[in-house]
Length: 235
Image (cartoon, rainbow, N blue to C red):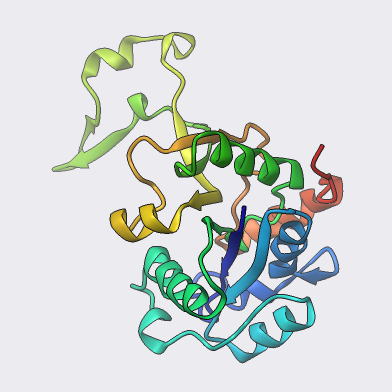
């Protein structure tokens, strides 16, 4: 099986400037994802899609494939991850040949382990290349969520849900951004990694599902990085 690991790393970030190459535990943030991908036998290449020459230089030195700088149209705030993925996929298959899967590894999820990635690949194989999506249990249950209308709190769900005890609520999950894997055919057809009926890759560790998006997130990441073992190997 041949899987292309794609790491999207745009240079611009309003909430956390330069986040993809900020130093976390002595190395640029993006290297955490590159190093994990290198340990997965099924990954044929690690392609970094970036518009930033500084990110490109760092990733090339780390052994990643950075064949071009991302077109300006795909480097805006409105550009979607799937558009970036299909752009990279089209180029890769035209230059390197057909692949079986595209694995999206966001650099803002540095604490995913090799074991988790291997588990996702195994699910992909078992389910005949059906999309696999990383999920975690919700910290705040959606049945207890509200919206504000005319300065009033209005439940999103039927009000009867508010009367239930937390232990009586069904378990709910959220996409954590840690792991996405889809076949080229499904990705091009559905234009999403989050297709209906995707196979869940359950990630219960709050460390692995941690996503860095703000300065506060990065501060928390620095405080927990020392207790995270990112060198766990596939069994």
